Length: 411
Image 1 (cartoon, rainbow, N blue to C red):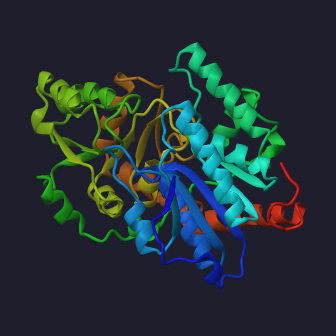
Image 2 (image 1 turned 135 degrees about the horizontal axis):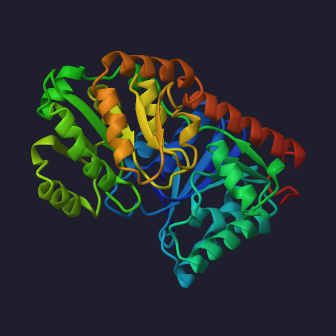
């Protein structure tokens, strides 16, 4: 079953003269892949394209971007059966509904995002012979899975890769991983960095001191921030473990965790057992528009996840003029450049993490230099308009190759 969020939008009344593109994503929660997709749709609309976004219900504690889509007057179609979890009956119904919608909408290009929508969407578009792009926001197969799960996801991605025309990676590391796993040949990939609205990070809407005061931070405090769901593989526990050494070295350091999730109670208990309660603040789930001012209130941004395509918080922090510390996973090294924009560390390391935090906490000039270098290097690369222009170039090339007609030969 499908329902349209905005019944006021009529395809027959559309006066757009650009390309006709359908995006498909599993759920429109608050997250990097979802923000990337929504910004792409918004940018395409501004450029005159006729765009529809198909998604499942925004289930989960992470919050929803559906309200933003409504404010931007985006044509959103929700498939109630499209869920993140594997469920053969719901997945089959979702696939059939995708076929129906694509036949109705007749797009020139389909662009899929995320694992579930990526598999089902590519299958449906391939059956209808519609040119298809899939963005790899992060690999669904990784070293922290069971061998059976890893192989299942790898095989699914390989099967789906043969049913689309172009694979877009949000960082070069995703291409390397997919090529090494035998998903598709290298020439099928193109890197397009995940764009964002950079102006709020260059000029936060709220003053730094006011935001710091909200959380009890004074001018003397060095604030280390981490922005991520409180979830497995996000690495909060390593930051907490490193904090004991950091606080012994510099009692003025404070830690700000931004995000919500199922591990909140466990993490707070871990902090309590370490006697660090006075040094940690949990901001909880915040609206996306607050992220720039929260980064502005920080002095150092830490990313301790164990898997992620290219975490948006890294370029966001650098555009905001803050140094970064990251574990060396996936695409992190493409923005966290050792000794230039921050420190790149072995995954799961605690002593090295404490040392990097201490070094930056002790040296305001080093923090300033890393932050300025990052801002100069990455502001334009990660601007949303840059991403949209590159993606529209891919769409146009596919349209030309498939004669530009909806449902033209392809796949």
